[in-house]
Image: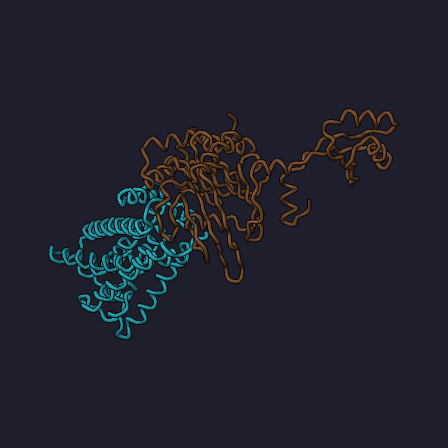
Amino acid sequence: MNAAEGGATAVADAAATGGVAIAARRLERRYGDVLAVEALDLNVRRGEIYGFLGRNGAGKTTTIRMVLGLIRPSAGEVDVLGARVKPGATAPFARVGYLVESATAYPNLTVRENLEIQRRLTATPHTAVGEAIALLRLDGLADRRAGVLSLGNKQRLSLARALLHHPDLLVLDEPTNALDPAGIAEVRELLRSLARERGVTVFVSSHILGEVAQLADRIGIMHEGRLIEELDREQLRAQERLYVRVGVSDQARAATLLAAAGFARIDQAGDGLRVHEAEGRVPEMARLLVEAGLDLTELTTVREDLERHFLRITGGAA
Amino acid sequence: MFAQVLAAEFLKLRRSKVTWFSLAALSLGPLAIALMMWIVREPGRAAKLGLLGTKANLSGLTATWPAYSSMLTMVVGFGGMLLLAFVVAFVFGREYTEGTAKNLLALPVGRHWFALAKLVVAAVWWAALVAAVLVEGFALGALLRLPGFSASLAASTVRDALLAATVAYLLVPVVAWIAMLGRGYLPPLGFALAMLMLGDVLGHTGWAPWFPWAIVPQFIGAIGKPATTIAPVSFVVIALTFAGGIAATIAQLRWADNAQ
């Protein structure tokens, strides 16, 4: 069973049991005149990976802080694992691991000692520290002071802290910040396996669209404090479009030839022709253009994905 | 659960330079007064070493155990009030300066336990500092062979120093609250300094027994007319300040937004 199937199964199970990990209703947060989060209705099902997407300032972190009870909503309410989040409430947090914005640790303490603090505060068995160190591949750094760690390793330490007590729900705000590409892939795989093998619900915010698209079972897009769209995996796939970019000496003549050959959707763009719905007909296209005596400089299949969709609905340049 | 929180709070001090810095800073007090006693007793030798023997003599100091122990109490009481504010500013303010406060607030632990555990850590830290300084002070006094030592003098010095240290400690929950309100080290330190300055002013107006930060300085003779005891009304003022400080600290942790 691959990750996608695993996630889908978990989501199906959760749906069958009616399990909701995070339920926000008409959640709002106002800072003076600024409405940072507006009437947010959000349901994150148990066992799913929910990608929370938005530009900087969209309201993602404010929402996460309200989910964790770090800040109070101006209006509305939020339940986490069935318990109402109120100021100072502790009920759900034995089962919640989290990382909010920047990775932080006590600089005078080693990686192991930082995790030991979390272990004590979550009343977790002693073995949990070693497990978390191994899980995040911090073995070689376990006895190094947190103050001398690189940003990427501090991020790993923060993730280890979030995972140490085997939470049922992970709330992660930009968890791959400062990680190198290999680290990002590792964290992605880790989150997938946690969701697939342990049924952990993952609520993860990011502005890295490709990252979220690869990981999430569902995606919510925040913009200017509002949840403007939710997409499940199928809808996400539907957003993916392929086109063939054609670099050719005479664009107008090439477009005419391709249209005559039955290529229905052709756009002329600055970087060449864009021929849509043509991914299975690339060899035919090449033969046609070469036989017509045109100089072919590029023939590339391009994936137009969530990023373009995201930019379009949030008003950015596509 | 409180035991686990307390253990975690003590663990946070491991390898912390601030603990050693606080000890070094307070240790300078007995060293300084011991030096003054030596200068007063040996003005000629002090002058030869370039120290201000004549001026020290003119200050009216006498090189005796009663004078020395009175100054030792002052070190604990007045110097300690500032240093204790520094300790509390560190224990509470570091969570904001180091960005770790947010890691404490969504846990299966009541937030009030953190406030109480931190206050216990500060109390233990402060007790260790006071004990170290008293031992150092008595050792230096013995080295100087000052005249006028007696067991009852030593007992009253220890009693007065501990009373001053305890009263000074009872004021720190307010400083802790300011550390959380101001999210760092500087606001509580500024607050403590401002309160001591205000206490100095009020100490000369007759309001000292009513103002928490003037009570210790007046008791140890640092401001105004020296008091031999702490007035009963001052104990009420201090108790109210302590209770108010604890309530404000817990309320701040529980209710305030933590948008760090």
